[in-house]
Length: 129
Image (tube, rainbow, N blue to C red):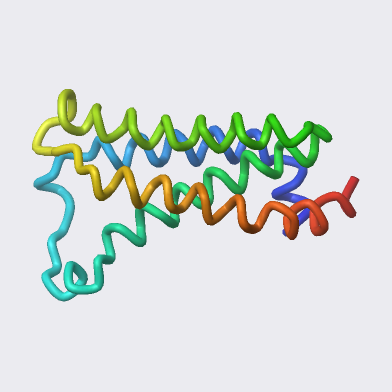
């Protein structure tokens, strides 16, 4: 499984970014509302998780291409900017959606958590070269 992710990390990154866009552009009336999940801030954990995944995939791209640490930060800030752009698009373009600062913070949190795993990712995926 690691080899599959490593060999296709660029493709998976693009697919995952498109999936995030599709999920974020889904009209609000099609998103289920479950009150007990709101108590657990489930939505924020979902936001953090999907951006953790996107950042992690891009960090694997950096590892695969032996890119230096500045590229990791470029990927990090690109993911954060993407999360912000999606929130703006939800507020301005998508029907029955609204932008949310807390969602942007959750998106960014997921990206920063991925940074904490960068060294571990480098150990695991450098061995596959």
